[in-house]
Every structure is written in structure tokens, then in C-alpha cells.
Image (cartoon, rainbow, N blue to C red; front, side):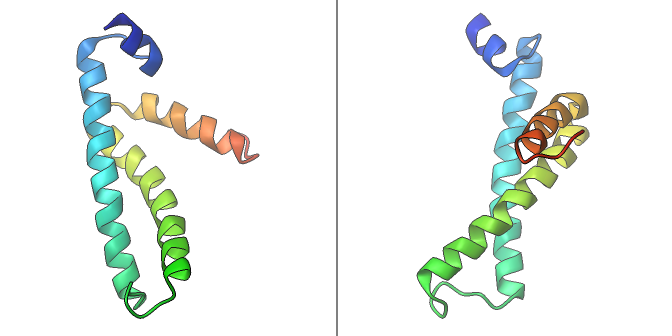
Length: 97
């Protein structure tokens, strides 16, 4: 268990459980909201080129996931943990935080 806690950079088993719950909820919600957005934009799997559909869908899921990660993490009391993850990701894109 220590290796897993070290990998996730958490201090307790409880925090590890909460972090994993946040990841699970966020992934599911990101897919759900991506479905809503693609439906609102009238982008259907059957009517649009398959490559265009998946490109748009992936480009939607990434920012939705990042936003939801902060929202769900904050709701479960882990804002600092997930904000640090977001800062690392944003630095990789060349943004300074």
C-alpha cells in the first residue's frame, strides 16, 4: 500500500480512496457531458465522418475532464491535490501557474 500511496502522492489510505473516487466520478461525468455537448452541436456518430466525430469528441472530453476534476475534487475536499495536478498539466502546455 505504501507504493501506491507514494505513486499517487497521498498521505493516507482514506485520501487514496477519495482520490480514486474523484477520478472515477470525473471520468464518467466527462463522458456524460461530452454526449450532451455533441448532441447539442448535432454531431452524431451516424451522420458525421468517423474521424471528425472522434476528433471533436476527444477535444471536448479533455477540457471537460480537467474542469470536472477540480469541481469534483473540491466537492470531496481534495482541491489542493487536484489543483497541483492541473498546474503540472498546464505547465506541460507552456502555461505558468
